[in-house]
Length: 294
Image (cartoon, helix red, strand yellow):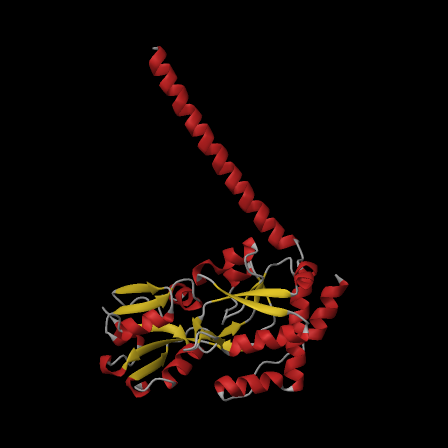
């Protein structure tokens, strides 16, 4: 009896230890979330002199590595200009895009700024800046596969980027496209997805229009690709930050509005997309006044 009792007590103590660890972990997660939602880190960032931006460095033309390894892109130029006007340097940190909100909440990065789409699900945990660019999810295929409509993906393989707004749209609106493919393959980057598309390991790819249009236009065989609008809702690109960072949000919004007013945004849009800025920032000052009154 003594031996069995001892073994039983050891088992009980192991269970208690695991419960304590689990409870501590949950409490830690709650504290991190609470701090992210309630703490304004502007003074800390200003004192440091640098703001840390998290990105997927393969997302053309928003933020990507050139052949020489240097970062380039629309969001890179825009972030540098915004914080130049705010007297801060920008440190760009490559992250696992599927873990972006966790990196933000934990304080590893200060901003998610890389073709980041506003969604209702993301707004539950992330504060967004004013919209600065429009986007939509489209289906890209090789013309040889004759994908002329969503139904032509029946029994074929489709590619999605993990954690992307395309992945979300694909699953939230199953009647538009999801009902047709035999299987969906997830990728960490669109670069890897395009490799499989070209090798016919997948026959379609759900992807941001800004990425697809720029990427395909710079390929030698661009005429071999087809882009198809599936009917997914239009999207707003904005900058993601912690809910507690109200001062940072206000400063970014005001700077974006100033850039729209002085023509700087138009110059960036012309440089990367060949068209003018289509976003109005007339409501920014009104929102700032209202938020300051609260």
